[in-house]
Image (cartoon, rainbow, N blue to C red; front, side):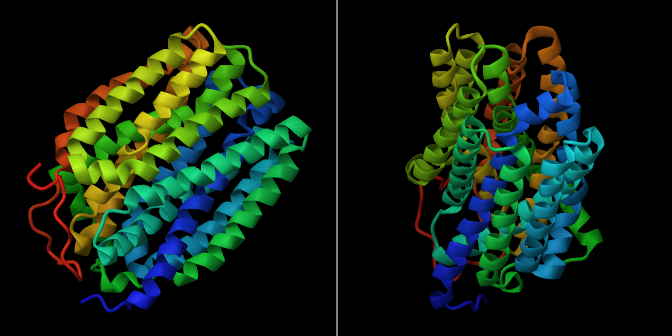
Length: 405
């Protein structure tokens, strides 16, 4: 039985928001300076893709372990340690790029490792809060992440415009984010009242569940869609549309703002229409925006494409996480599996787009995202809610349009 008092629930909810928001701030603070780091190191698109691959390798290393880590140490301690580790890693990138590629690769690997475990832990705690509230809130937590990315991107654009160095900008933003999160997450509720602790061998058993794996592939498609926009929109605006660095970063911010709006208003659509039809419609919208961005003849068309692309990509990842956590007693290992599969997109995405960018321009290379968006439509039926939960929530959930889908 869940014994966390309702009095503690608002504080836990705020803490989850802050964990999502400041992970977004940290990510965008780095992503906004990718063009300057690339230019300083003299990297081609394909070589840049390989450098960015270090982040994905770090995440893939940590994600299969994350369910066991969260079950053993709890989401509060996991996020605390990973926030501090991320702060050290990205600060090292902000300083190390002045000395060559190797420090950047090492820093990005550690950053990816910290991000993967942090991501699973905060989603598990988000599931705790969602079940306690008795209503959908996960997309709004992910909207908090998007708010953080927008704030980080806008601050990055301002830093580029006024000539603040990459080192000063990144170290200040990343260290501040890590400290705020480490303090905030002390208000997380206990996971032991919500999830069953299991050993590493028991956690691996969830990799044999067909529904969990299908949800993972669905999340992979949307993670690829989201990650491609984050990594390559500003680079494509500069290289393919001939804009300045600040305009390229602004297009990146438009993409992130569109995702934020979609995630904030998404729960209402999900309650009225259900998971499956909503994510299918958004996949089509994202595909339309991607085509406009890739084939537009003017920067204004690229901005419009980034807007639609972002709106369409907004709900896939959080809805997949909610679907993985439908059974609260098994949320941690299932979220870990889904996140692990989904993060494969960040493993293959950067080098794939970079390789295509060397041959057909980055804008055209981004069309590879469209293939996975079509796949996501085909897999979306896996998101139907489970008919029976193995651990009932503390109060009955209201009926939604998902029932029977």
